[in-house]
Each structure stands twice: as structure tokens, then as C-alpha cells.
Length: 411
Image (cartoon, rainbow, N blue to C red; front, side):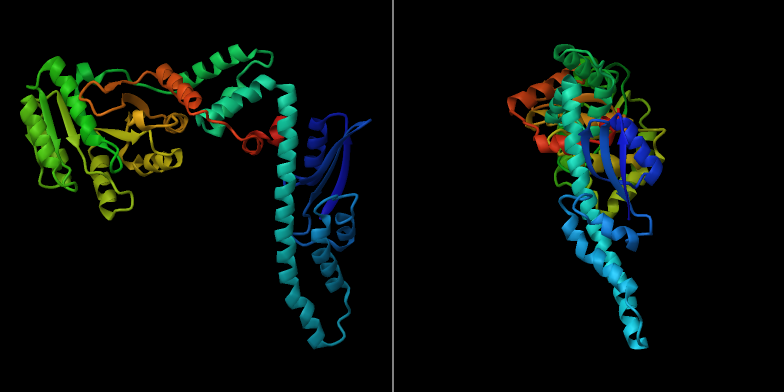
């Protein structure tokens, strides 16, 4: 490892000089303010993961590494001793050769641990410095995190804020920007109709949402141009539910023998302006899931796949659902179970990242009252209200790890 001491008037200049001398893999060992400006002690592995003997003693001196240095001292000294030991006999010579890989692995692990500890300390310093320089920005980063907004999205919004704005303007700017990032479709199906296949994981409310859409269409246009397709053969009683709904509305109901027959069936229903297709709830690890996706992907020109997502699902699970259903080319999304959600930031972040246009939101079991067109600003306001209602608090240590980066210090 090579250890250097860099002095510069500002942190930005010091960091740049460290990168020029040691490269992008440099580890910041310590930093402090001095009369000349800023002093940074940094190190980098320059010998392919092995400690260079003439640098090892310097790397473990208390002046270079105040805290963790004694932990790394024993392996480093051992490595030097192994290299300097004379090979008296052939049997003795094999001992250092066998011990070298283990010593190198130990040193590598300890260097990784040291890097992690030092990066955590540097993140703390960076977050503290950012809080001092831009208090409004850090407050908004805190509030966006409490809403559940993803880190990259929160940073993008914060980066666009003017540096000299007050907190009231900053909040208005941030929430408006978040609403502008969220694409919505408006109520276009209500007038134009469509051929909609409601897809999604098991239990997200596809059949209930389909019933709400069917009733909304019937109240506005009547049931003569409405057709329901019951292709969910996995759930017991799913066909009977759609038949009962069709009988209640006076709409035609079709039941294909296999899911693969859906595109051919829909092709024969061109006299209907609105066709709503109930698909099987997908277990993402079921072998049949890929086969159903291929059917939807092959009929993308005939059908519009609408991905139904539950707002009560965690953001990580929603991201996996979006990724798994990507082969079906969903162009729009429906967000259900808003009444069960304790946070909306994760759902909004997933929709913004995937650029899925949100059409409707559902927040209850009433048909059709609990289904309404999505409004971006209303959803952002709802996310803010939920964070306040649940008294969500962002842990300070979490904020330091999320946003305390070298980029903030050198900005």
C-alpha cells in the first residue's frame, strides 16, 4: 500500500490531487483542517492486493492511521517477515510459499474492513458539511426519505434546488418536481375504450379492479359494447365471478379453454369497444408464468397490458414485479390498495423509475366509487400526508449513509 499526505487550500482541490496521485481506488484514511487549508491522508493498494514491504511499516504507524492501524499491524509485519526470511532448506522454503496466499487474503479482508470504516467516517463528515452549507437541501432530503422516495430520485430533486432558497419554496419546488416526474394517462379509456389485459402478481386486486372498470364503462356507455374475458383458470371460482358480473351488467362473457387462446378470441371480438381480460394471478417463480408472458408479448399489437400494483407492497418487491413483467411490455399501470398503504413514496419511485404511466388508483372495495383517475399532484400530497400521519422519522445515521458522499464534499 502507498500512503500519501496531501495539503490543499480546499477539500475539492485536495480530493482531486489525491485521485491524480493514487487513482480512483484511493482510501481516505483521515482528514483535518490546518492553517494551510485541508490535510488529507490517503492510501491505495499499488501491489495487486499485497502490502509492499517498505511501505508496510509506514501504513501501520499511529500517525497515519490513528484507530484501526493496530488491527492491520500483525498481518503486515508477518508479510514482511515472510519475504525477508532466508530459505535455509527446501522444506523450510515451502512454508512461506504456502503461507503467502493466506496472509494476502487476510490483509485484503482487513483492508476492505478498513475502507468500509473510513468511508463511513468520511460520509459523516460529508453529511455534516452539507448540512452546514445547504441546510434547506438536507432538510428536504430528510423529508423525501421519510416519504419513502428512493435515494437517486431525492438527490435528483435536491440537485435542482436553488442554493439560496428558503424551506417553504424548497418544499413547493420538490413536491411539484416529484409530481412532474410521475407520468399519468388521464381517463382515456372511459371515452375511447380498449382491449385491456389486467396483469399482476397474486392478490393485488385484478378481478375487483376489472369489475370497477366494467361498471364505470356501463354507467357511461351501456353494456352493449362491453365484453369480459375470463382467462383466470388458476383461481377457484374466478370464472363464476365474471359470469355473475356479466349477468348483472348485461355484458357478454367469454371463457377461453386455455390462456394461449386469448389473442385469437379477442381477434374475433372486434365489435366491442371495451374488452376487459382477467388474467391468472402470477406466482413469479411458477414455470407457467413465463409461458403466459410469452402469450402477452406476442399479442402486444392486439392487447394493452395493464400492470396492476399494490400500494401496500414494499418498494423492493414492486421493483421485482415490474422487472418480471417487462417481457409483456406493459404500457400503463394501476395502483390498488391505497387504503392499506402506510407509505406511498416507494410506489411512486418505482413508477417514476420504470416510466410506467399510471391510469387509475383504487382505495377500497366499493364498486365503482373506489376507483378514480390518477392525479400526480394528489398522489404526492397523499404521500406527504401519510408520512406525517404515521410520524415517519428518518434516522440520522441512515441519512449520513445515503447522502453523505464525497460528491457532496467536493461540490
